Image: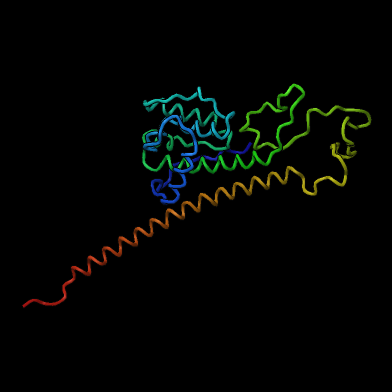
Length: 252
């Protein structure tokens, strides 16, 4: 099993580009949250709006009765630990304890850091879900897979459970044949994948992880460029003050 990505506290977490924050706020506004957005750090401190956001995107990934609005720090922390255990794990990441404590304490910049990361994870999961074919339904109308919706997007398509074995390695339905050497069932030798599906899926996951890393690094670069611009402006201002205070001649 692959290790979970861990979101931790880092330096300059309170520095964000205005355009990046505006995009984040617009994204949050698309969700029908139960409480109005007034102060992001305080409103999201107990984790309940986070659970609501995930619930809107992946309804079966969150059970809202596990989360209750609260003001006590220990109960807020418990909500975030439940998110780690029951929700974030489905999307292959978890939030570090230090970051949880900072969010619960309403430290500036930390909830923005988390929500930007959560948005990337949800977008990736949504993309994966759209790539997967719809679940095959049985005769009584229930989907074949009983896995929660958020767990299905990372899976690889398997064989249909509805296949009924016939004689001589054949199955009922479309013309299928049994490959003698490996025992795999395929429709036609000419339709076999040139690249094994498992290899393809692994490479696709690697590319998605790299794209995600690139987006995070680009966001950090934007923040650093913004900081450099502010420092340059400060330096120019100080230089102008030095020039104004420099004497222009000698008094007699």
